[in-house]
Amino acid sequence: MSLRHRDLTLTELMDDPACDPVRLAATYRRFGLVNRLVSGWGTVWGSRLAPALRALDRPARVLDLGSGGGDLVLRLAALARRDGLSVSWIGADPDPRAHAVAVDAAGPGIDFVCADSAELLARGERFDAVISNHVLHHLDGDALARFAAESRALSMGMVLHSDIARGALPYGLYAVGIAPLAAGTFLHTDGLRSIRRSYRPDELAAALGAGWRVGTPVPFRLLAEARGDA
Ligand SMILES: C[S@@+](CC[C@H](N)C(=O)[O-])C[C@H]1O[C@@H](n2cnc3c(N)ncnc32)[C@H](O)[C@@H]1O
Figure 1 (spheres, rainbow, N blue to C red):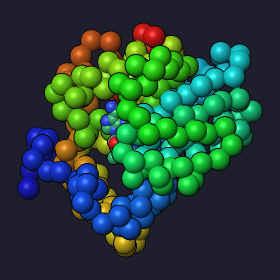
Figure 2 (figure 1 turned 45 degrees about the vertical axis):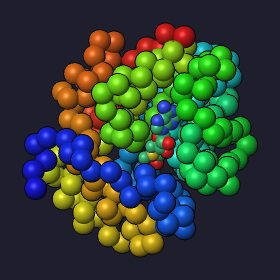
Figure 3 (figure 1 turned 60 degrees about the vertical axis):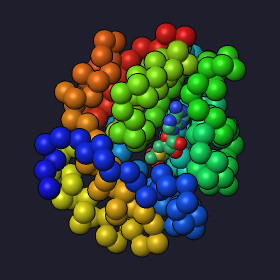
Figure 4 (figure 1 turned 90 degrees about the vertical axis):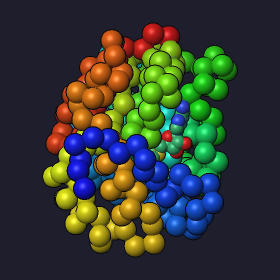
């Protein structure tokens, strides 16, 4: 098996509308721990998002696009409270199965909506920042271009899309490290498929095009950054 190229033939078990709903809900809930361990959002919060929100000098509204089970919004809301920032958090996901898990987990200052980026734009929604986690590798070609453009059109400030960076080392580490956390979930199969579908930094920069900067703020991760044009 080579990781030289993205493997676009793979689909994730959780993307099957007929997949086991109990395993799916367990997968969304377990993302809370997995994302905390691997996603690097603590670093991105401290180095990018928190300073930008603080500079507004007023309460902010932040959108997490493709919020899944909602764990990233919950974590960032806790970091904002810790840092004394007033933020309304909105997690949006068009998948009703993800939305149901997120709504169960919602807390103060957090709203989850069952909608995609195009629907939010059509409603005239605008935010001080738009973020996502683990969405880009699901998208190719026109779908990626549309998601990138819509995320910028929804933001009056920064846009930050975080994802896995494809590579043999993260693949091997994930295969071993996920074993104790994967029982009853799709995390083993889908995580490895995600890595094989993911971009390398130069590939993502080329796919997103002008206006985007792609970096690796923490090991094995990509962060695509742009200015919103709302
Ligand atoms: C793998 S999940 C990531 C969930 C979560 N962010 C996480 O890190 O665990 C990708 C999610 O993106 C959502 N999605 C795909 N296209 C979207 C769009 N245009 N707007 C909002 N959500 C989208 C899908 O419904 C799916 O739930």
